[in-house]
Image (cartoon, rainbow, N blue to C red; front, side, top):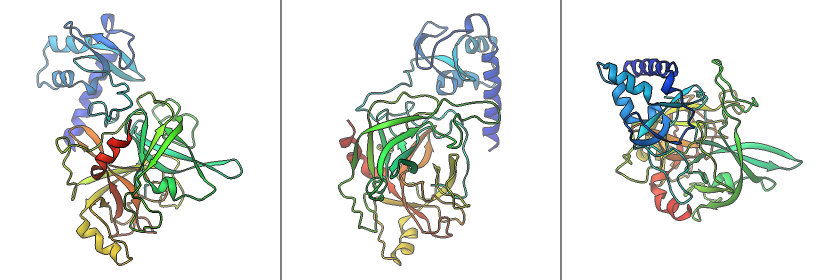
Length: 368
């Protein structure tokens, strides 16, 4: 909307101001390092947009010379082409510990303010989107499911991506920080480039014990992948928040817009090389259930529906990937892609997703 465009323009002007600053502003701290701000208060060197205090100063209708100088003197480095500032009282956006599920601002923050009918994402958009790689016969490998990074050690995905695969396949690795599978190094038309994607080995996989491969209702379609070592967070590798507290996000998403992201099949029936996104409206089970009951599928309260618009849907290859909503500036993983109509993007047939909020206890018990 218009307000967003104006804000984005002003943000750009601030970045130019910061990047053009000299003298005491030219520091060489890295993202997440400790620092002291111009007022002598301890903080951490983080991206400008993640520092509420400085964003508030910048947002004043009338900026004083002191405000401008304070913003310039807060500069502590850069990350790519993005300015870093010393934010007092903040903590580093670094790894939060193996047993911790991060909360904002340590999750759900992207550095850019199964997909059918989708549109390409930006280079660093949805940095928690993960690809699952499978080892197949004759030395072949392929990406056929997605997932979401929820902390530095765990990926949340769908159970069927683990146990409902061909017998000759084996879950091999997870890939983080990917954008375009067709490029060795992801770059956009403006010359901005990402770091190389990260392939992580797997230590352990936990599939929900209530998932039955023979159950066409696809109940409890959820699984956790524990990586063999912690992954370092970067601009393109970051965790998404989980909606495990009603204080952070409303559990009732019906009628609201959500977003899915992945590399699944597109309108051309081939997998996408680039990470795509699509906007989907969440539907109530009352709206969604009758469509599936006609085929002997009975949805439960642990599932939710989204989509049902012709040509806009998640699709094969997006399984396990995220269905997301943004709340108070942070992105939350509200559901995991589970299943849908055989013809993706069928009008009035929403896709079915595993409702993450209903599995909070299970996630906490299996993340260590």
